[in-house]
Length: 396
Image (tube, rainbow, N blue to C red):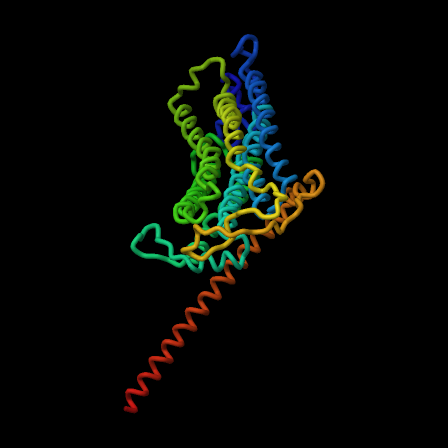
């Protein structure tokens, strides 16, 4: 860590991390390779594998897009893995980009988490009207008061807001981190209140906790209504990618604080701070990418040209969930366009994500307003009946 001894290389404003991160050590780690070059080779090979596996899955969904609503969400969920991989690998190759890129992986995580929630909703009811009918028919136990229940629409409303705040908060945090780092006010290694690092970490941690808790509560209460879609497998695949990264961040923070990593003379300060953690992420994403490939297959969306196909009914009232209905294929062709280019264009269009969010917000708000109006109307009818009965008793 001798490169930190000169004042010119230190961070501004008292931050112990230099403003521009660079590799100075050439001590061999494996053979004649320094850890920096060894890391680039190993992580680069893992990145190639992950990109091939994940983009082959996403391309297959794009070319077999018989249900755009669900499959576009699946593509956005799958995007989390290559996003982690590419951002990590670029940070390894260009250490100075680490502080600027690290937080954007959480933005991708927020988008994927929101897509996962809406995918679960689509599994239970494919259209807005069906969602309104389905959730209106439910009574859901409250998390902190299990003996009390709330209406399904109110539960959906609470879950939706708890999850949608996550990508919004992480995007604000990402922009704030980039700006404060450029102004020398961030300081990755400091927990001092005068730097923005601690405040942004607290904010994003709270936002993450709220969103993850909402997703878990939603799954626990709705899993019985979507068994045929294997929601647990999909949840585990998603949580592995997110949970392992979080656990490793905590682990490396502890190892750094107790000085275990600093005893390895072949590792520089940059290696211990971001090189080793990002290499672990790159390696672990290889098996996770294969698991995601298994959890989100394209087979359920492949069109069968048989005259009749036995499929679960799209929406069923409570009590009829085990029945099956003989349905004809209404969609006789894939909608992804030639080579899936149309599907890729929609998937890459950020306006489509915004439109989906606004559409969901309008649907939930309209349903809640209709429900409140219905309750108010019922109360007025009851009051009118009571007053009529009271007048009759008085007349008698």
